[in-house]
Length: 234
Image (cartoon, rainbow, N blue to C red; front, side, top):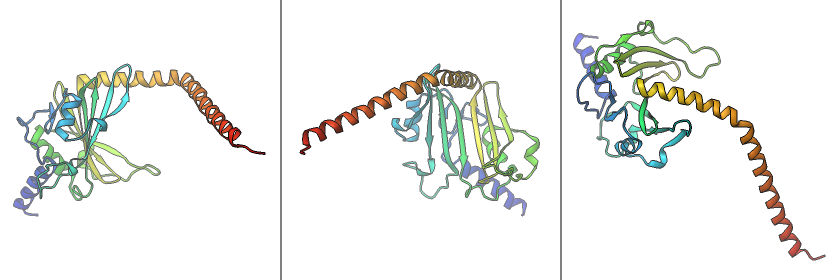
């Protein structure tokens, strides 16, 4: 490949991966496209053109953690004729504040691209990357019996935010994970506590469910008995 061809490919990759994104300034790790960390659920719903009903509650205590999955390839108003490499973007919120963004790229639209191609594309927006040892290696086969394997190949970091570029083995694609360090730390602690509470309350919850199921079965049996008793003629 000639130097001009390589340059054209890099520019094409940048345009495809970050299509429709007009960042306020390069190396601004506080946002992904138009979504800034700390944004409310309603702001991201409006930005993506999704519905409030699309937002899922992951945990309700000790903190409210919610999640919104968005497929920008099907977004209303997307410019016609422009490729959108992001297959799905997942936004996660802690007490109505965006703390985590996970971008999974369409395997078809990153097919043939190398680690360096993706790192260059992301670096065009977020600045110089810190490479991992895996950045210079081709993807390794997934371990036997596994569905997928992911390897971090580069990171972009500041005091408050971090983005990590991951390579996935199957399907062979990439994902970009962004996090607010402060909110992310609180969210991780809240998720650990939520799991502990779920486990602690499981016996009581199962017992209550068993009682409710028994009551429903009894009500259904009583209704059937009443109906049949009234209509039975010997």
